[in-house]
Image (cartoon, rainbow over all chains, first blue to last red; front, top):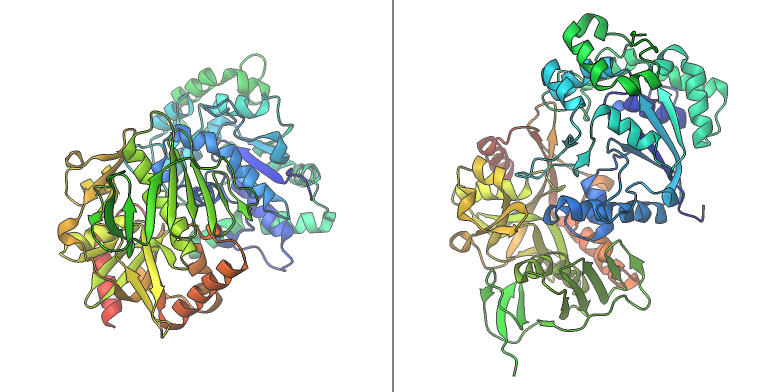
Length: 288
Length: 300
């Protein structure tokens, strides 16, 4: 690999199947005959990793303003690509945005491929509420907040760099409608109902060569029950401290029993256009 | 003639063209001279380049946009090319961080990423990734009456027998608003490191230990969402990799000679010093419990 196109972006709004896919990848790339350890996954670091930033820039991000950090991040990924001999998988929860200096934060010159995971926002709300340890009402508000960001409290040092997520709809739009990168969109619901084909397509997009047998085995090893079992036994280091568990139900449609009617309406109202576009609402505004 | 100020910091005598109020004034023949002047825009033949630095070992360049370029040579000279309208406090912030980090590497000393605390007749280093709580835990020790040698960068040299020695940095800590409040203090009493960043300069002259001390142990702090609080000794290959990971700006080291010297530093530490992983529950900072578990570990 002599050019810089080495990064595979695994991008999503939180709780949309990103970690499931990373567990699948770990199992696909593993030579072992048992499921990969969820606490020791094949390296798919998050793009907002503070340590990588400090190493790449030679500066302490804790001495820089959020805008200064944004402006340096494209260079950080170029650095990572320059010094890597292999594909780099980067999990991303940031929206696809330009830096204050006008550069794409996730640039095509370092990009090998981009996979974007999308999930029914009604299910995202339920899962995200557990993840954030916030009420469903508050979570639905966050999903509509155009200024929402992770790690953004100015009074303390966060382990990760600030990530601007925007609203659920704007997050999708930022990745899917930008014109720099070609994006392969995966719906969580298709990962559930058409698992094999969905994962085969994704491995083809990344250019990973794997037999059907190998893919089937990796799918079996990354079953939600396996992840839940491992989390119950040893915990999961990526779980937020206050959340009860990371791998919760892992099903499509749990909103039907867990989300009150008024919030279902609220979400459909807030995110109508994107819900229509990704098949969560039909043309008459009925839930699918 | 240009006025010059003499200070001591990181175990070095520094002559500076400008005032550095966070440093202790000193006298004697300087090891390092810091001046304003023209710095190159880039190095001719760098051995390694990062996003904002270039290094060829004994020559190093750091660029901090809209603040300054720092040209560091031969472990004894730093030339600062200040950007128009930069605040001098900001110029000093990156001087006393990355620029001195590069200079310390050039001198063949080891800048370790962590804060050091005097316990008994020796020092411990509290290390870990940014945000793990190195400075905050050191500040908690200080509140209990312990003396601090250094915050954020702990300079290690080696005796003739290869025993690691920790050098005092300078009498200031940097803490975020949240940490200061958790320690029961008022952030508004302290200046901010930069106007837009809620991290403050805490002068610690009264509780500063200004003499080198033998290194006793290194604790690598990490947080766990399982609520665990424990100390465990790190062995073998992982010990080596932890030392490398937590070296301050390890990738400023370039060239065979510097790498060899650097590797020897790790060997000496690995041979003589216990490196422990200190796991704390994420979310809440249990100061007393953390201090006690460290003291018990040192006594055990």
